[in-house]
Image 1 (tube, helix red, strand yellow):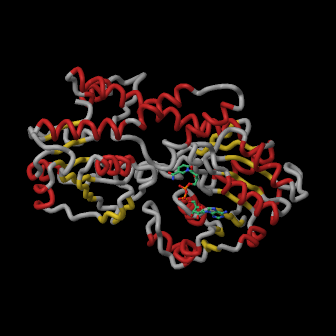
Image 2: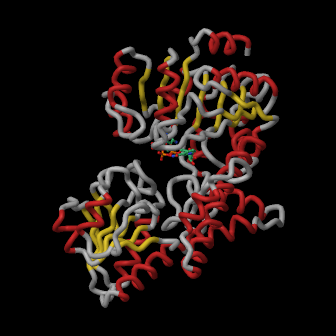
Image 3: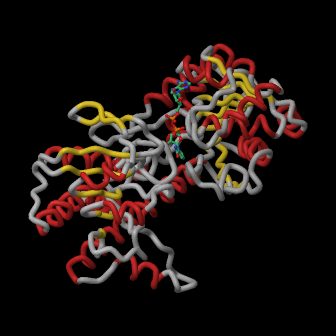
Length: 434
Ligand SMILES: NC(=O)c1ccc[n+]([C@@H]2O[C@H](COP(=O)([O-])OP(=O)(O)OC[C@H]3O[C@@H](n4cnc5c(N)ncnc54)[C@H](O)[C@@H]3O)[C@@H](O)[C@H]2O)c1
């Protein structure tokens, strides 16, 4: 252990990052940029080749950054899991999706732990970064790793440190987002803390992996519950003729005890819609039902239905039926400025509009093509003709590049699900929450 401590301090430790996706690739770069030699592992040969060619496939990582690190020979990627033996530290950043019935699918974590167990070396530190339910590190990963014959504490080290990355966020990244660390024992905690202090300005040690696991899930539960609250309020405001956007702005003037959340067509991304189910599922083992999570999921998942109904109603008021109408959806990424489609509410919305008989096209500067149940749709150019020929233009994702004034001026009807057109004075704009 002294050996690894020394190697972390003088940056001679070799860091292994398993899973080179939205979480793993930026982390691999962060370690290499402070001078560690990093070996990245992925099962996708294509990703491995791209990393080795210095070409990025993740929006938050520029190819320039990647190729600069490749030139310095500080980062290499491989599919060969036998090479896990070459590294001192292994950070696991593999996916943790849900099954169709919304139960945690730990198969990637389990498969990778089995691989690590086969190649585990004395003195190695293993850290799980993937989001999961409290208990995973101790109950799932530890027994698999100890099948190697090595014992945690004396032979190897194990910790949980959740990734808190917010894709597309230009203000907060790995360096200035405090990093939580929960070690399975005091030596593991100490080493994991030292590891992350090399790339993060603030490391927050907690007493055990379960606290770190619960904290990560709680942070996302906090978001879905508050988003659900404001989505519900938006629907009430519509009935009462009050603008929810104005209410949120006004409430935000309070300097304490309040923070703004915004309504929208639903929630998306890899974390917020999925992670709370990890907790809900684990809670059932204790005969406990996480009612806030279930209720929030119910309200949020109903939003695409509500938006479809509002679009239908808005067209109807203009003498047009949704069945046969041309609807142009602006933005299919799950949030502004990203190229990530995962769990995007726009996809659900497009599907529902199509089911109601609308002819749907879309524009998204970040996503050139999408698969919907009726086949493939390609992003259309946002020309004046496209805007004026649509019966309704739906702002589903508020990408900053959209020229709202032009969109409002050219379109017959705009339905804004993000409140982004506030401030524009066109009577063809209808907003969610008003
Ligand atoms: N994307 C986010 O914003 C975000 C934020 C915080 C936490 N997380 C969590 O981090 C974890 C990873 O998420 P992500 O968004 O980076 O996923 P991702 O799908 O972008 O990347 C995962 C990568 O792991 C690879 N992989 C899968 N199994 C592997 C294996 N056995 N060995 C090597 N590579 C393997 C995949 O090929 C893929 O490249 C998840 O648990 C997620 O919940 C994600």
